[in-house]
Length: 178
Image (cartoon, rainbow, N blue to C red; front, side):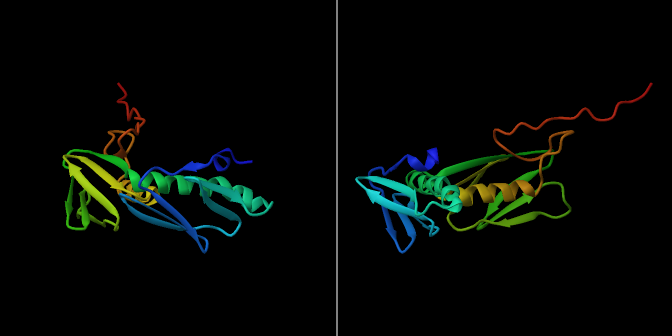
């Protein structure tokens, strides 16, 4: 039994959830999100709550039950308040800039790295801090991971792109023998 799947999802005011033909649509003040639901899962909307349940007693249905409940919960939260990920750029001479629909990174390579910003995601830069926000939690997290993968923080000086709350474990480096 899934503890996450058993708890009903409360629908806040000014938020609409509809289910039709295996597609869950959630709309709110932030926008609209849609997700196709697996056939082993049933989703129903009753009395201001979304109830997710397995359609049969298969192992697949029980494993997807909590997963789809979390997806729908994230959709309901996201259309009301956008998800935010913050990245910090550390290193001498490292710069980041937003130009149009591209994020331009100067992170120690011989050329600037340009990353196209997906639709539905907003990126803002203040000094060396990148703020990524959007209503879709999966898209925000995936884009943040993609940006971080361009220059991961190295363990000796800590240079690179890291998450705001990430702690980089530092190594000592070479010792001189005397």
